Amino acid sequence: MFSVHDCGHKRWDLFKKTETTSVLKDKQKWDEKIGSYLIITALLENKIRADLCLFRVDFGFKEAKDLAEALKVNSSLTTLALGWNGLCDENLKTLTKLIIIGNNFGLQSTKVLAKALEINKSLTSLHVLQNNSMRMEIEIAKEFANALQNNDILTNLGLELNLTSNNGVNVIGRVIQSNKTLSSINFGYNKFDLEGANLIANTLQSNTKLTKLSLEHTFVCLEGVKVIAKVLQFNNNVLACLNFDSADLDSDSLKEICTALQSNTTLIALQLGGNDFSSNGAKEMAKVLQVNKTLTSLSLCYNLIQPWGAKDIARALEFNTTLTYLNLRKNRIGCEGTRELAKALENNQTLTSLNLQHNFSHGPEGAKAMAYMLQVNTTLNCLIFDKNYVGFPGAKKMAKAIRINPTLTRLSLGYSSLSSEAVKILAKAIHSNSSLTCLNLRDNCMGSNGAKDIAKTLQTNNTLTSLNLRNNSIGSEGVKALTKALQTNTTLTNLHLNNNEFGAEGAKYIEKCLKINSSLTELFVDSNSSEEEVEVSIAIAVEKNRQKWMTTYQRIKDPETEQKQRFLDLLFFNRKVKEGFPSWILNSLPCSERVETMQK
Image (cartoon, rainbow, N blue to C red; front, side):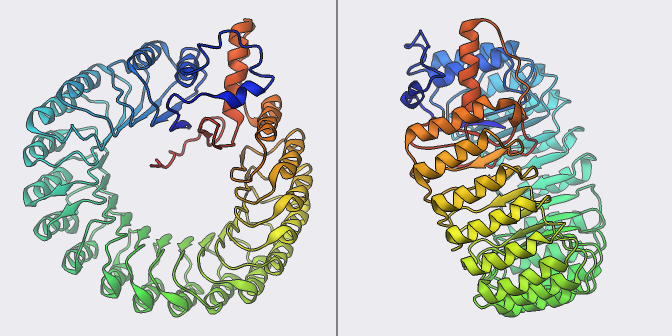
């Protein structure tokens, strides 16, 4: 996804220092309005392949009009996200996904959007979020409902933070019940009374395509939960994914859901994070895991289940044969709960991904237990253990597990109090490992010595593709060692070196590396106190090496257009976001299939 955040009408003086922009003749055009000018030019020339995200971009009337005209002729864009910029127009020609967030939508804007939905034959996904004037009052809801009724293309609908009127909910709900194409609905950040819950329940029963429902941050009263749970219990639906994160579910509401899940045979993914149902709620979920035969993904993060709740979940995992993903992030399970889970996983043969981040495992005993489990478990391929103490004793045990374990592909040990000596042990273990592809060691204390040990591993390792060393005080010496290793490494594609105090000297090493390395596609180097001129030279080094950065842009011979294209390429390839730079962030090239997390 190509995205722009908080550009406004900033002047881009920094890039005027570069040779790329020195011959621009029309300086006025490239001044205050340069951001929107480049975006629109890119759309007109089909330079933005599939996804465009415009958040907090200060578009005026002229820019909005130009964007609409560009959309009329563009034939490459499939996803457009408009956030906090007051934009909307009916010219949606080739879009398959539209996101509108934080805009001042009223009745007139809704009519325009409704008309677009009626005539558009390509849009399959629409998200309308937090549009303060579009609070689904009856007239607005009717316009929107009519559009949905006449549209047989849309499969994904999100109405987060828009359904506050009972009348509006009723109008929209009746249309959705009879819809034959919607497979995913997001009613997040709303509030439903019993009548609204009945509409959801009826929709689940009557809509034979609906497989995904999100009620995240949506309060549903107890009686409403009972109605929805009853539908789940008797399997009168095809729902496969249900999101109840941060829905203020009390113990009674959770009990209703758990009772239904004991006989449900359609749900495969359930999210119940952020409901603070404590160890009693974990006990109820453990009962479900012992008998349910379809659930494969479960998230119970931020629920304060504590060691006792973790113990109940661990016992259930000894019997469960279907769950593959479990998220217990931030539940205060401590070392005791961690040990119980590790013991259960020594024999479990189905769980492949476990998230235990931030669980107040203050001593190394929890890390040691997980390490021993990894020595005997041959199923788990992803372990997230950030913000738990590992230290040197835990790292020593983890290193032994890394040498032996043949299946672990992702290991995250950020914020784990790893010193340079601890990292040295891990680096040596990775040297002989042939399965690990993603390693996160961010926010530890490795320093330049730890970075040098990682660099030695990179010289010979041919499996790691992603490495996060953010905030480790590696300095310019650490960067020097890493970039030297990357001149010969051909497998690493993603590297985080943010906030490592390597300054201008370290930036020069990166610049030199980028002229040689042919595998990196994502590089993050912000917050390193390097001089602006060196930052620009890094960007130019990437721009000059564009063929090695997965680009296939067609070059145009016209001099003026050529210059604009070079400037646009420079922005595309620059991963650096710094004050004075336009905040352009490119996740990957070609456009990634993953949707970027929307940042406030």
